[in-house]
Amino acid sequence: MESLTKDPEIREITDTIRHRTAQGRYHISDLIMEQDGREYQFADLVMEGGGTLGIALVGYIHAMEQAGIRFLGMGGSSVGAIVALMAYSCGERTEAKGEKLATIIGDMNLGSMIDGSFMARKLSNLMGSKKSISPLRLVLFSLLSLPQLFGKLGLNPGDMLYEWISQRLQENGISTLADLNRLMESLPKDMIHRVTGAPVADYDASLKIVVADITTSTKVIFPHMAPMYWADPDQVNPAGFARASASIPCFFQPFTVEGISSLIRSKENWSKLGNFTGKLPDRVSFADGGVLSNFPIDLFKRPGVPRAPTLGARLGGKARTVTDATTIQKYVLNLFNAMRHYADYDFIAKNPLYRHQIAHISTEKYHWLDFEMSPEDKLGLFREGVLAGYRFLESFDWRQHKELRAAELAMYQTQ
Image 1: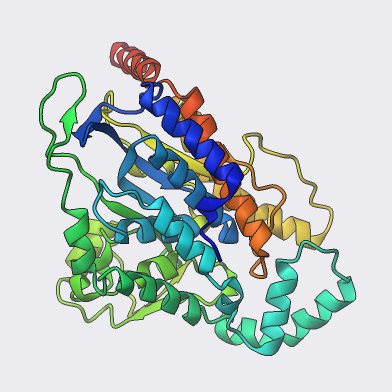
Image 2: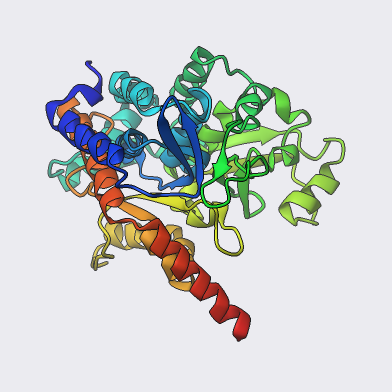
């Protein structure tokens, strides 16, 4: 498949972004770098989970990169975590990642990720279908898939997803966390503060993947909390972090790690990193990070007025919608959505200025479990991400945002 970035409509938008960038239109951050006569600006990025809708996140990244924006810290839940990991693996912080990511996503065989039994695959595809489904057919496939659900706790093993992530990392020379750390630890050497001109070499830039440890009810941030689960985290394949974060309940089987209670310094690590002081399990199961926080915009929260913003990419419209719960299916879905969004909505309500840092990508026409997505829908999602990035660039005012943050800080200090 030809790269998604070659689409004429997308090229028109990105040409406009580059033209306005050359005119000095977009000011996003105080962390900058001059290279080859061009200014690069640096920010952090948090991406929302949303299954196959994650293709739109790649479009957003591509649009922002056309404005010379590069990301230092990156994180997210579920597919947001996968995209963050993929982006990190594609090269140094100063390199644009969107073009390469677009090719990877465009060529991805989504259908191969559905790797359960025949009946499990049928039910999985029904769950993601945009067509009306016969209730009788749905009930039949559900009943025939019960052994998979009750025995394995998920329709699909998720092995193909793990292998796909692992292969993409290996193509970029990454087989272990140690390989990835070499990229994460290298900040741009010539990065300075826009206002003071002082060199910046102390910025905490990292990868943050949100995962739900459902054995101990722990919100896990990988790779930071990896010592809780592995004796030698540096030798762990980072693909496991992303696979764990994308363990959609009932859809993919939980990602598991064993031998935890026998680890050296296990109690110390669990107390220090996870604030857990109970009896340690020998085996832990991980579920989708979105179960606890589907849009963890607080991942890079820093005190005071920031030198760079934490940008957010959300999958869906700005408005929260009203949905009835008159059937058991709707009741369960609404309950699940309430749980996975509560923490994020609560944080934004308490920190309203974060609303200005978030781009909302229109994805209402697409289904988040559509693993049989057509090339046209892939392109459509990517285009929506590019559009959302362009609209954000046109609306975000970094100078005004800093003034609002300073005023907010002053208000709290006088209380």
